[in-house]
Length: 87
Image 1 (cartoon, rainbow, N blue to C red):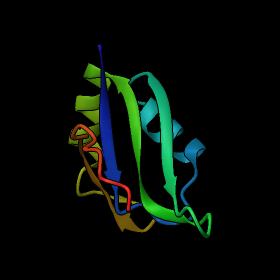
Image 2 (tube, rainbow, N blue to C red):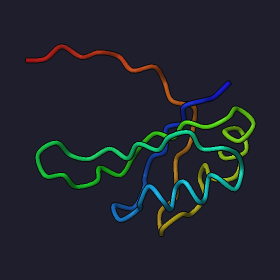
Image 3 (cartoon, one colour):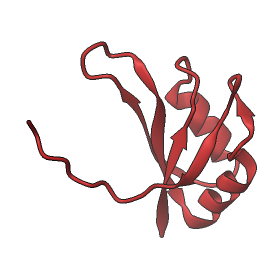
Image 4 (spheres, rainbow, N blue to C red):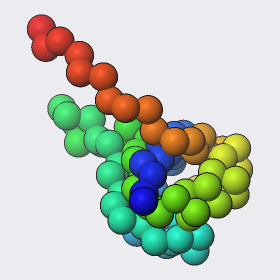
């Protein structure tokens, strides 16, 4: 099984490779999706990482509230996406 993690308060300069390398030390990273602003293409400071259950639990324990790239990360299990109405 795998878990999808929410990773917040990322530095805008954080790359997918940096996340994959850091989190990969704790388990197999299946995917990394760093969210960008639709209009500017700039990083929005959060993303989602999918990885194996044991690795995800270890990442939460080792990274939530800890400094990474000059910022204290927020790492937890991602909540299911709620569809918002389009205006």
